Image (cartoon, rainbow, N blue to C red; front, side, top):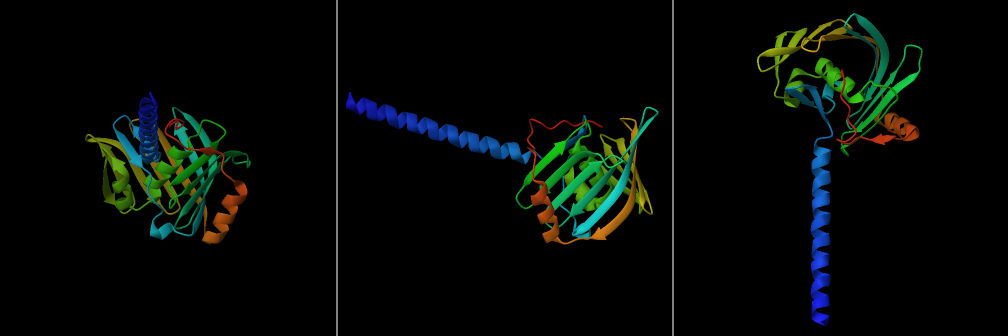
Length: 220
């Protein structure tokens, strides 16, 4: 009877270890999909690290969204170092809409959103416009990027054009042909920043919601 109890205890211990291993494995796979943004039914984009050309750069821009005859505007501020990217969205009047903090070295991404605007979608489409074509190509799943000129690129899936992206001076225009909306990104300012200041700012603000595959809500 004593031997049976010992055997039973060992079996229970083994089961617990297996369950723990499966949970850890599941979490790792879960995090691998955190930075994947569905752009359309047949195309997705994996967020790419900050390119060398944008390291230690701050950008402030106005987003103008046009869809079905309606137009809405909001502002974003992006701050980037070699290991961290912060995005803040706010109304023209200065009311906070969302914030996003991506620590690329640690692999953590947290966000806080107050309305239906999805910070991940904003960041993904911002990357489609500003990131080098080689980086965008690496992030595309089931999609192809074609550079037609210095200021014009297209993203297609299954031979159908999904995005048309045009740039002129400080204004970029992204048109989602399939979904029928366009985004104009007008840069108001660019500046240099230090990684230390960005980390201090992020630590003061703190993080709100840890991003997981369960709470991602992608909407155009």
